[in-house]
Image (cartoon, rainbow, N blue to C red; front, side):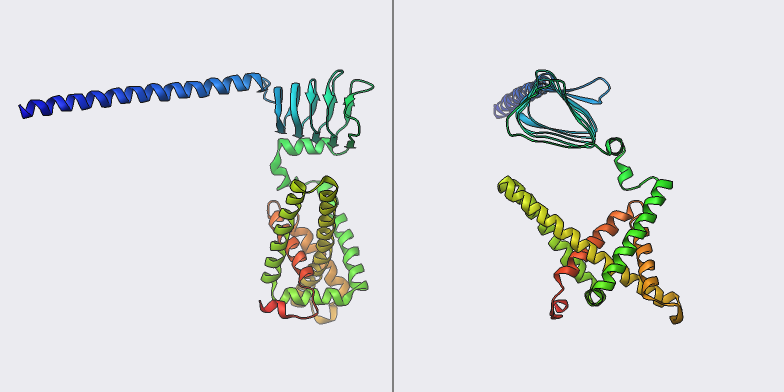
Length: 326
């Protein structure tokens, strides 16, 4: 009797477990079907791609910001805003916010509407109507240059890290050598003491200078992003411009100091004292750093080191030298 009850309990438990498995399978299968259906409907009603996958077609995305990389964008009905990198933007419906493109053009059809600013770098703004539908007070910012270069960059992003070796590449680097030689010679002539102190600081503790500069660069970057997100537009624009100017000034001064430093070091090691000179050291340093910044893929690391060192040299330029004891 006890054995029969055990058998009955086993079959009852097994039956319940089997029904639970069947119900769970039905539930999961139905849930997956719903997700697929929702994704299909979403793709059909809002965003789709052309057969050649070169154009992004926006049907109805009134509450969405559209970002596109390396593709053209066509807004059929509505979108909240559009940004395209390396592609044209065609507005056939309405865009409530800004429309921007880098390496492309913006085409506004006859009855299309753009509520925000139109921003173009490397392309043109081509409205089909003489009086395009725009909100009053909105601006059009356009720079029609480098369109093909920016388009090619989006098609082959690796060329940013590995530039093509050509006569134009060599000519650019020779002009860079000439430019930085003149800038460095001018700095050394006008402010020899500041350049010398910067070289000494870097030689005393180069890793700390680089670390301090990198930390300040990261803080500045996040500060600019925060200002763009939370401050009024005119305030964030001023903050961003000030940060950019300060970083560029630090970069110029730091690069001058590092070029003189490495030039003097190589000159002292490989040339006899009778042939050493300040001008030759500057030329050697400029040439070496130009080579560093021209090596495929390595140049990104060299640029980061150079920028961090430059910022660190500016922020450690104090009358006392206690900072290197930290």
